[in-house]
Amino acid sequence: TLKTLQQVDSIDSDVDPMERSWPTRQNSDPQEPPRRNDWRWHQRSSVLSEWDIPYEELEIQDLIGAGRFGRVFKGKWHGDVAIKVFNIETDNDLQLASFKTEVSMFRKTRHENLVLFMGACMKLPHLAIVTSLCKGKTLYDTVRDRRETLNMSRIVNIATQIAQGMGYLHAREILHKDLKSKNIFLENGKVVITDFGLFSVTKLIQYGERKDDTLAIPPGWLPYLAPEVITSLRATSQYTDSDLPFSQASDVYAFGTVWYELLVGDLPFKTQPAESIIWQVGKGLRQSPSNVQSRDAKDILMQCWKTQPDKRPQFSHLTQTLDRLPRKRLTRSPSTPLHLSRSAES
Ligand code: ADP
Ligand code: MG
Figure (cartoon, rainbow, N blue to C red):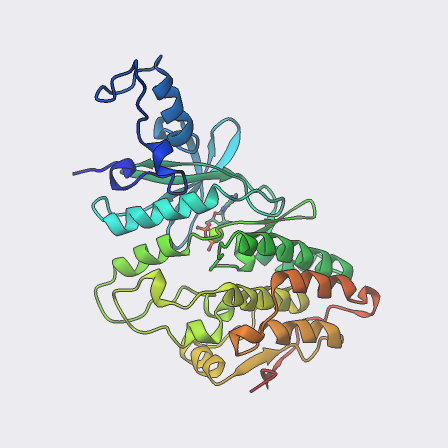
């Protein structure tokens, strides 16, 4: 049987419950469902439907790509949009509740460097998130494009925008949990961060489907994972978001990896197998950009990659540090073999 999300819970979890229920007034019968011209209908629609997009209103066009949690389509809804369609089993209350939580988080975000959340389809079997369509290139592609010359002041500018968007998320007590260069777009020099807070939905799907006891590690995921998260990865078929110790500090660690990519043009531990990365990071080893000339740039990296989460800086602090960097002395190095180094305190 299909359930609508409203049956599981209201999408407006942060709305005063009094506001959500039908208020009674002397001249309207609370037992009767509100009608369209009834003031209660308007109150209800403004609270519940503001972010609720009827699936029929969406015009789904080309498939842009498939990620960990489902597929992303280009589409139309009052203009160009990106539509993320989730493959969620229709009878799983936990997944539905999790989706609802993600959406309620999305609603609270208004920042230049965060993708614009436009709404969601909450009615099973159509679960989808509608955001603005990012037209630029991802940071992942940008740092790998040989024609793209990233000078240091551009690198610092990009990093600052990322830190500002992330600082905003953290100030609103939202964790990204999946900060990576593929989730960062560059549109005419402006950074747009996507996919914040979607991790629980994606992982629930991924691990919910697993039958054996092996751990599925998406390619390119490990270099962004903080040691405390890596060491808590266990071969388990019943993974939930709460099993992994994500925190503001683990987001900062992931930012460190993005900073490394900006400086070096590739991911740390590039060609190494998962077991080897897990082992090294767990032992406190980090890849060092030994060919980055700037001590200041390396310092930022090592701060973000500290083994102890509470030793890593906050994003608000990082924006200040980036602002003080002497930009002209910094040069980006070509990709040459890199060495391992111990993280600062271990
Ligand atoms: P990943 O982030 O691992 O690439 P996703 O499922 O998030 O996987 O994205 C799938 C594809 O859709 C990717 O090519 C990604 O760049 C693209 N994409 C995701 N969100 C947007 C968006 N808001 N605008 C444009 N393209 C997007
Ligand atoms: Mg993504």
